[in-house]
Every structure is written in C-alpha cells, then in structure tokens.
Image 1 (cartoon, rainbow, N blue to C red):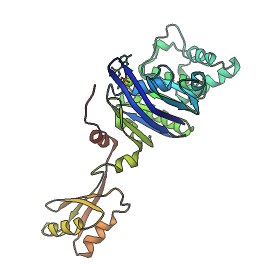
Image 2 (image 1 turned 45 degrees about the vertical axis):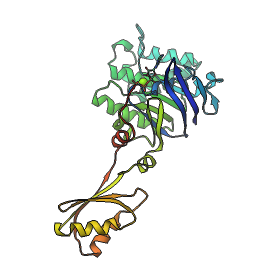
Image 3 (image 1 turned 135 degrees about the vertical axis):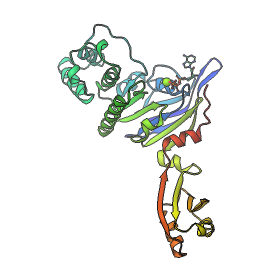
Image 4 (image 1 turned 30 degrees about the vertical axis):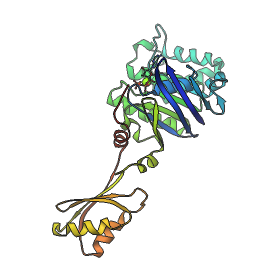
Length: 310
Ligand SMILES: Nc1ncnc2c1ncn2[C@@H]1O[C@H](COP(=O)(O)OP(=O)(O)OP(=O)(O)O)[C@@H](O)[C@H]1O
Ligand SMILES: [Mg+2]
C-alpha cells in the first residue's frame, strides 16, 4: 500500500531522512515513532507530495509519489501537525471548501459533511465558527477534513499532540473507528503509549534512520529481555536449585533470584511458558505466584533508541 525505497532528504549538510526503506500493507495501522527532529514530518510530507526527497522512491496505492502527485492526493488524507487559520469560516463551510477542492458535487457534499461530522463527533458544531472551536475540536475537524474525499490511506502527523488527556482518549477512539472502516493509517507520535493499543505495526525512527520496523510482536522479539516471567516459590532455601534447573532449560536465557522471588528471562521464540511451572513442580519446588510481564512499546523505544536527538 505504502512503499518507500531508499528515501533520503537532505537540507544542506543535515540529513533529515536517510535511506528509508519500508512497506506498509493494506489495513495496517502503522505507528511511526521517534523523538523530536527524528524525521517523521519530513517522511509524511514526502508521502503527501508536499516536499520532494533528495533521492529515493515512494509509492502509495501503486501511484508514484514523485511522478503522479495528483493520483496520490486522491487516495490519501493528510493531517498536518498544525492547524491553519480560518477566519470567518463556519465548520461546515470549511469542510465544504475542501469537498469542492476535491471536485465533489454540491449535493453529495452535504451528505458527506454530515457523515464526517458525525464520525468526528462534531455534528453539534456544524454552524459554529472554526476559530471558536477548542483545540481538541479543531484537531477533530482537521481529521474530518482528511476524510471528506473518503481516502483509503490516512497520513496523520501527531493527531493527538497538544490535547488534554480526555481529548486524547477521544482521538484514540476516533482512530479506532477509522481502523474499523478499513483505512490504512500511518500515524506519527513521539509518545509511544498513545499508539500502543491500536497499532499492529510500528517503525522507530531516530536521527533520520529507521532503527526497527515491523509487527509490534516481532520487534519485541528482537529484544533481549522481551519476555520475562516472575515467579515466587514457597521455600527460599530451594531458590538456587530452581535457578540451576531453569538455567539448564533451552528456552531460558537467564535467571535471577532474590530470596524466594525468581525472574526468568525466557527466549521470545518460546510460545508456552508453563514449562517453568512443570519443571519446578516435578522437582518438588512449589510456586505460589506466577506472572508474565509484557514488555510495552515504551520499553522497546527506550531500548532501541539511545535517546539521541538532533
Ligand atoms: N525546511 C527545513 N530546512 C532545514 N531543516 C529542516 C527543514 N525541515 C525539517 N528540517 C530538519 O529536519 C530534521 C527532521 O525534522 P522533522 O520535522 O521531520 O522531525 P519530526 O520527527 O517530525 O520532529 P517533531 O517530533 O519535532 O515533529 C530536523 O532536524 C529539522 O530541523
Ligand atoms: Mg513532526
């Protein structure tokens, strides 16, 4: 759906994006994560045909971003990271303006405007002036605008930035709704937890370089310490025995003991961690607590990036 090959963008001696190669498939919700200055906006603007890469190739829905910008614009909805100024324009006029720009005829536009206002929960604001909307509402309106021509692909540059916690949750619900509608979405953020529960794939960008990309679970799998099981055994005196038993197992990377608490670092390729329970029980070591800790996106981010920014 979205293909980038060797995309590079250079500003004088600064390489904002270096040799970006990645693919986003139909129906994917791709979280594009990176700290400030990583090159997220640069990538999104290239895909939205607003700036040209120094070198490389990109396509969206089989349309070449460089040579077929008009075709690309038809299939994408682009939400920039800022909201322009629209004095003396009402909410419906704003949407109508974009509908007209996409050459949707007047009668159809009415229905579409009502639909996108409904999706973004702005129906009650239809006749309000854009400037009088709160920031969160403006952001939703901006998203409504990207939906007017019913694009298959959405390029959303930090849609939840600057929103309060409640508005963020509302934005997240809205994005989930768009996912249900079958859109392919590229969404950028420097806040991982914001993306955690609805992205199926992620890419981690730092200083213009893609450090990791793919299914969330696969990226977690590349990581040391990605799968940990914490157990408590009844008898602390048997901890070192448990340590030796577990260490000898092929699916275990390392074992740490602290009194009767044991942390087992399990190889991510192991599907079922119940062997821990069985192994210890078979040797008469009783377990009183068993927890598998999931590594979240925030952890992945901290481990993969070194925290450097430009
Ligand atoms: N027009 C420009 N001229 C020169 N340098 C630029 C220009 N636009 C962006 N850059 C530089 O390119 C790098 C990447 O910027 P970009 O806006 O893509 O980052 P970002 O990941 O979107 O960051 P943020 O999280 O702050 O939005 C930065 O170092 C930035 O200063
Ligand atoms: Mg940006």
